[in-house]
Amino acid sequence: MNKSELVDKILELKKKRNAIIVAHNYQIEEVQEIADVVGDSFALSKHCASTDADVIVFCGVNFMAESAKILSPEKTVLLPEIDAGCPMADMVTAEELREAKKKHPGAAVVCYINSSAEVKAECDICCTSSNAVKVVRSLKEDEIIFVPDQNLGHYISRMVPEKRMILWKGFCPTHHRVTIDAVKKVREQHPDALLLVHPECRPEVVEAADFVGSTKGIIEYATKSDKKKFIIGTEMGVLFKLKKDNPGKTFYLLSQGMVCPNMKKTTLQSVYNALNEMKYEIKLEENIRKAAQKALERMLEVE
Ligand code: 13P
Ligand code: SF4
Image: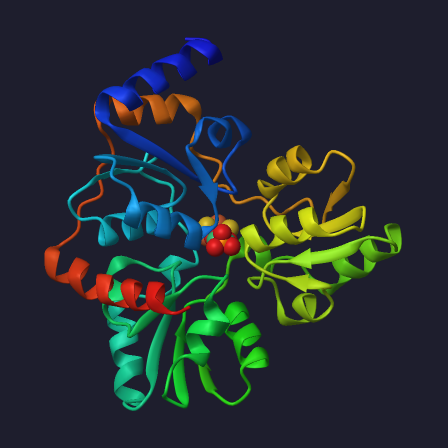
């Protein structure tokens, strides 16, 4: 099938299955184009919790599709590429977290949404990169165990210095590999551009930025700004919407290595296969799902 045939078939199947297609901002262009909603982790989890579709095709990585299933157990949630995972989410297990909780019995446990359902089930509350600071501020406990992203955790502790943050050692390979030398180099090349970065970047990179935010936050900031040039410090997938919505502006990627291989696995063909064969369905043990749901719903209540 060529691209337009594939798109037609996807739309046909979507109607037949009463499905919606949601895509993360890091997905390839063709996938973003056919999605009903494109957004950051927070926007997508909120959308999935409120949709009345029967089937959610989640074009993203495993923890995102799991989060949709946690919030909407009655829906069929499909992840088109079974191997699309998040290496950072795999850097903490429920067992390891239980051990850490024993060492800090009075601490609140906060997990980044980039974590497995089993890890979420061990936590008091979840957060995403767009609400992490608000979530931590909302807690009464002074001590917080934060998993798994050390860089996001570091950013939160800078923004909420009154809390004692116990940081896990996880990191996102795509963001963590970017060093301050890359910032210096690109700043020299484009001295009049603003630097917008994701909080998954190293602390010194975040420190050097003009704006820090989620993928959605970065896109909104650049779109609203009256400046014309931006250096983008997150995965290259965001460039699609940035360029489409801002034809008069120029965007430079902070580092050419900012590619998440797992986010690039999903194609139009895999979305078609997902809807046609109803695969790969996310299934969770009900006791895990319920415990994880508490942590996610508590996050959604934080305003
Ligand atoms: P956002 O919530 O900002 O979309 O980030 C998700 C993610 O995986 C970043 O690497
Ligand atoms: Fe995970 Fe990083 Fe990919 Fe986001 S960009 S899904 S944190 S590996």
